Image (cartoon, rainbow, N blue to C red):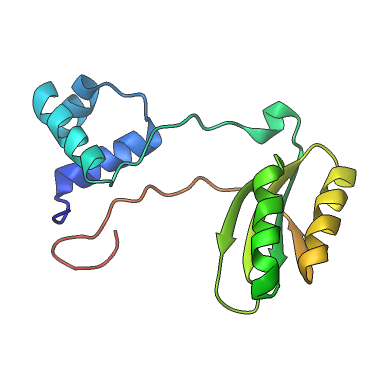
Length: 154
């Protein structure tokens, strides 16, 4: 996709914060008509910049009071089995494959420490793990692309 202009970046910021906004409301907030805003949103969707819409759920409201980050150092041969385990484990909310000493980072939400221990014990079958409890998660910053003038992330 061609570079994003300020209005595209504003639309992305709005939809990342409030994904249920109507095209009319998005247009009002960025200074466009509803049809113009709708056309821009559709273009962002078709080009793959917007990949979907989803509900953001509070894990604590579901009784998942333990939030942890588990880092795994493994071998290439054990990578696929570790990823398979993660995909089949509902407590694993996200997985990142990273460079450096660790290979995978798992974000885990559990109802109690005993279940976290079980998840960590299984992951440890694939290599050394390091577990950190999350004390607080801060809101994610919206992704808005590259500034046109500076050529650096906004």
